[in-house]
Length: 115
Length: 111
Picture (cartoon, rainbow over the protein chains, first blue to last red):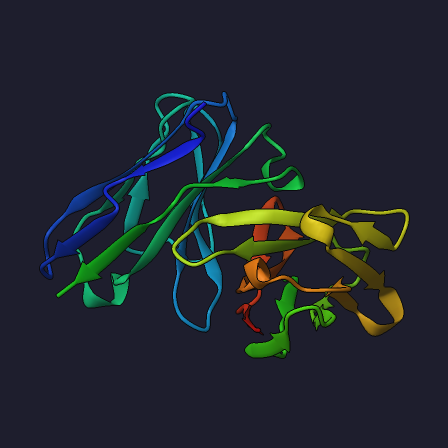
């Protein structure tokens, strides 16, 4: 199993550009989530999904969109990048729809810089 | 909403010495609590979790944590640290199927 994979590892954008951060897992996990990590703030939940076709907002959803068309993939879209979105982004997955009750497996992260 | 606080931003400990990382939570009922570790350049890995029952929880890599309701704390401990324990440690609480993380404590291990 590859576990949770994220692409790209690094990305530099200009303000106003759009992009999609990819996340995939091959563990047949129902629950997937996106976090951003900023210095001194820990990880903050952006969006999460309890299964294909079901998504919900986390703590800091503004400026981000998600969809879950398959169990395996959970892409995060930045529609119009802003410097405040400069961060490290982590995708995570858990076994079932109770998600965080179980261990979350984290991807290696994507470091995004918005100029 | 539930939240966790990690009072120590940075701790330096000698190899072989004991380590204790503090975590305080705010919640009225019994919280679901976690400790994660993040090695440099890596994602997070679960060390241990507490849902109910025995208040002393054993985890991986020789770590343990104790839930103390009277002090609203869930401190992480290791009796003897190894150089490979240098990392950032996060306490987290479950809030309506979502994890809320503390700001993290960075541990430096000196030889």
